[in-house]
Length: 456
Image 1: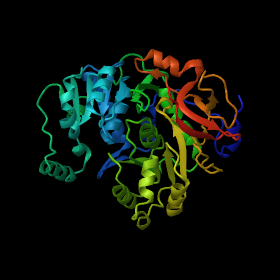
Image 2: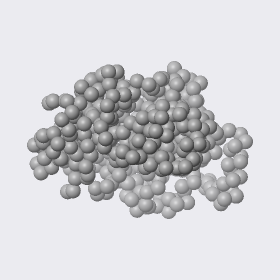
Image 3: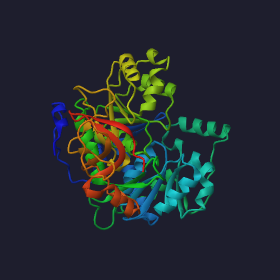
Image 4: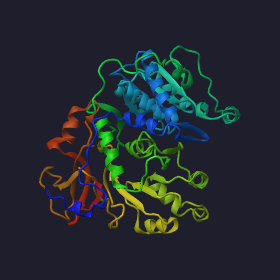
């Protein structure tokens, strides 16, 4: 097929990449080998270095075996962005356990449906969420609860102050003394170094590593099976696009939730792959963001369009030094030309817009980092990614440039399928292409433009 977009690749971007035959947790081990004393996660004053992240991930993997959760098992995460999320996800993958990432802010009925559909019996959950979601646990198959607290990785005396403040606000959670309830620090201690991390043959890169749920914009959310290969491939595709990201030197502002594929790739996996740091915050607040940027000087900010829009008109933006951020992403609906120009003028930095979806781990298109971009375009396909526009009626007939149709994707980042939904999987991946369900068009240069969701 013709690929007109290739001539618009920046000179440093290869048309094809080599993908190592590795499992995703290997990138954490590599970071710990190369940058053991580099802080991997900053969290409200707490700092966790890469050597500590690896130790804790290994402890977590072994502790899962102690409670009977071994290769082929399933672990649920009901967590915001925080150190325990990385430790749990990477520890589980090291043990060959499939990770389900749930949105902890979902309505109870939908969250209950997802937990039951997944079949998970063990979950890691933030203690501050327990009061809201505890009633639904009895309506699921959950048996084991690993309870993470904000204070777990805070330094002394900040951890004491947090506990006192939580009590004063009525937010303190007293855990029941039951054999199936494990405070996170105590759970880690169950993982003894003399135990094997993994029993039996190791997983293959083609095996599923995690399940993330779609947004549910067209029907109920579906669990997307992403393999180690999918996640590693998308990580390398994105990192190849930017020649300014230096290993061991970057500090990411990681606000996009990790239960989203975009958050896992840009806010979790990419910083780890680069051996850089990530500032974790559980929610987006413009003033808090600006204060953090001023204090910690991050160099990279994976964002969603609504975040850029919230910041651009904030009257305090001009008062803060945000020049430390050299790399911005805005993935989703294209920003208006007015917002884009205003933000770039105020910050002196270019915003890199692109497109992705959970089924592609998630990024498939980005605008050139250095070269020309086009207004309202979601960009051009990443290395080893093919895209075409077809007639929505038959899902096969390719349409010429300028005509709107369904966007189809091929690439190493495309999902294995949907969890327990063989018919939906067959429909989405028919003909060897991912049928995105999005209407778009391509111009003669190979730049793509999002239009709308395909009405079915």
